[in-house]
Image (cartoon, rainbow, N blue to C red; front, side, top):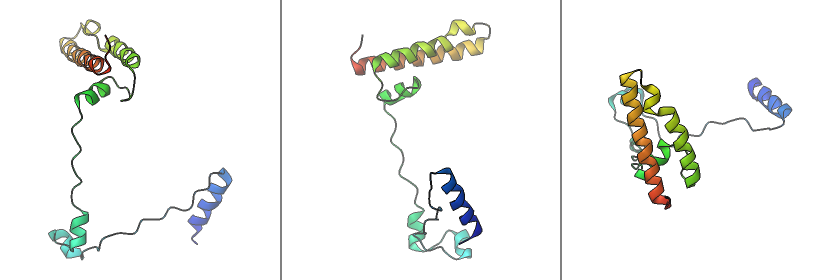
Amino acid sequence: MSILRRLYDIARAEIGDYVPWPTKPKASYKRPPFEESFAGAGSGNYQESNSPPPPHPEPTKLEKAYSALEIPYDSDLATARKAWRTLLRQYHPDLHSTDDERQKIAHEVSQQLNDAIDTIKTHKGGK
């Protein structure tokens, strides 16, 4: 047992939430020789394990609406309206009337917030 592992065990035991020493997972592929790793040719297992992950599905319009309002997906309509009002007060174009570029950005953001609350209202059946 190494000194670091022993110190880790002692420290975790004193804290009271003992967690065993972390171990590295064993590799499930055979590492290619040094020269082959640069050429891109390796053993079959190595190439298969390095295949790119599947692409993430595109978020739906409703998921985009919830993320625009910065609320959890399972929130109710009252929570969505409260978040909409809060964000609309923050990004209202009239509050940024001194700078034209900031006013344009605030107008775009407020349009996105209005679209988001409309989408949630139609989904939840609110008025």
